[in-house]
Length: 82
Image (cartoon, rainbow, N blue to C red; front, top):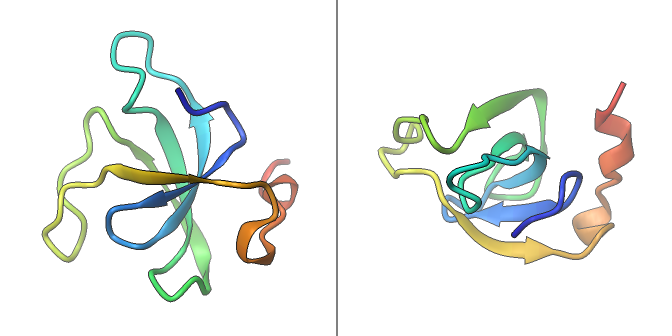
């Protein structure tokens, strides 16, 4: 559903990059959360597997709310890849 490397917005308002797909549950990929709900970059991005993740620190179960176009909010996803 969400291509590897694509930007997504989570139901928490945070922004993430899709890292890998989940073969059995395509809507629950492994992601890297890079921006907070105010769209400010985190100093240390957090990697989360949506299939096994618990709730966010705010108590909300993580889910992808929207896909975003490349470059949304001035984010260059390439800078997060080694």
